[in-house]
Length: 584
Image 1: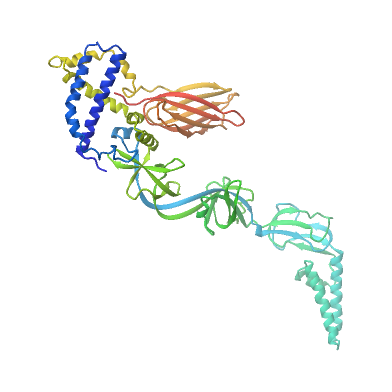
Image 2: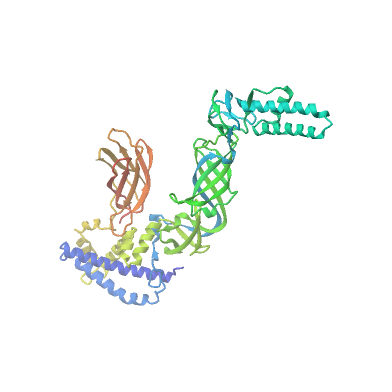
């Protein structure tokens, strides 16, 4: 949208009309309520305003023709506002273009390290007997495959070894027998005895050792079936064990599982074999990489999340079951139409952005959003590539847009500091009319002089909003609440319009700085339609909590400090500060 020089001249003309009206209203107010009707110069001022209005009548009527297309007139979209350049600079309006860019979505979750269930092993026996020696005798001990774990004396196992040796001896004696059936029966007895030894967990090497000795082994050595860490141990010397008794539980930690809970709104972006990263406070600066192995097919009703299982290699055993880590899944969504996330105002029911139409004209526009990254938001509907959107001072523009939609033009201008601009224009035009157009003014500049003299006694007007900004005052105030000492201050000590650091020092009844409090600052200006802003403070040191606040204009601000301490009633204290700003 472009504004021509003709449109600008018409806008100035309308501003002059409004300014003259304001001067007339202000003058009438003080004349009626402050006893100024008979003061010298007031009649000159009144007649000057009337003549100025008379001269503007015809020109204004002609200039109003064809203005229907001006921004902010009846044909403009609802909520469209016009902000002068000075005010834009004061409140810090910034814009950014709508463009296509790679959108990398990040899904974050808290992960818990757990054992790989596929690599858990239980060591038990299939015969009964007594444990004689124990070689693995501590929980947490590392075990290798084939490592001796214990020795067992078993009468049943000893008898089976003797049967096997007898079967071997009989087979040797019948080897030269002419009866084939006898040779076959002897071989079957040997095979049956050998199979029974195998079923009782003797390996081929142990059976071969029995054959070489020709004598049964009194005790059986039990070897580790796999490598791992001992989780449980019930093997004690002298214990009698029966078949099925679990002597050890082993866990192979060469790989581990990490479970993370993902919100339902993000689960559609998670895929099998997708790369995953996890970091731990125990290993600062180190990132472990794995992949998504399984997405559970059900929802946790308590947390409304879906569990995702990830696999991570653990060659140095740094990842220990039970540890908590920060899981991050990277999703490459490709090139998408995006805007900075600061540009979006989300009320819960709808999302909108402010379009920059040029020449200080801004229009709220609803949008439909998609995926979000750390810095950008995908736009599905509403705006197009090349549009410019506001990324800073959105909340001020939103407040003005709502006031403009409700028809509160004067409230809108005063809301973001435009009253000063408006009253300054009224002051200049009123002063010009006082000296030049007054009917009762003497020749030359005597009427202007008389009018200036009549302005004496109007010093009280400087307290009116928009006439002159009050200078800032140093802020430092201490209060005692529920045994706690609260000291409120700002940086700089005398706050100015713009970004200001709010500080609150919390001292407990014992005289120490409270480091476990939660502090939230809520700040606003005490004027109709001004919205509250909220910012959470962070703990700096020794009970000092700090947060940055944007104080957009000079004047009186009210800051409410909300302090929450464990097991104590919440504390809420209001502090007032005067912010320095420009004036007449």
